[in-house]
Image 1 (cartoon, helix red, strand yellow):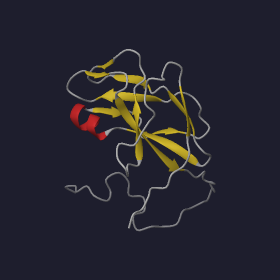
Image 2 (cartoon, helix red, strand yellow):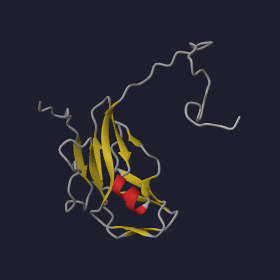
Image 3 (cartoon, one colour):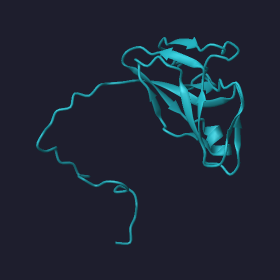
Image 4 (cartoon, rainbow, N blue to C red):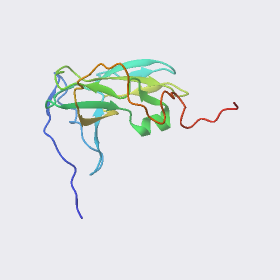
Length: 157
């Protein structure tokens, strides 16, 4: 059984001076995301604990009812401690500016991002706008008001 991943059309525009960079692309046949590349002219040095904003040099036009989520690349996170700070970062369907990635270095040494390096991935998802209905009380559930760690952390109590 040969199934294909559903595809949607997303228009993309390269920012001025970014014609040399590849378009975002999937790293494998069934990848859910596409890799985003650094469009910075100069190398970006990210010291331990430092946060840097890195441009991808692209703008996108998502169809209404979709969002793009910016997520870390697992290899950068595992090997170097580099991750996307506000993960997942959301790009709404009405945003038309350049996509920029907030990177943070949780690693043990300085990390350098060069032009054309893969720095994050973009995953497109359907969205829904909630219709919020105020009520005086909510339905009861077995979990109830149990919060952080309620379903899996053992305590000495």
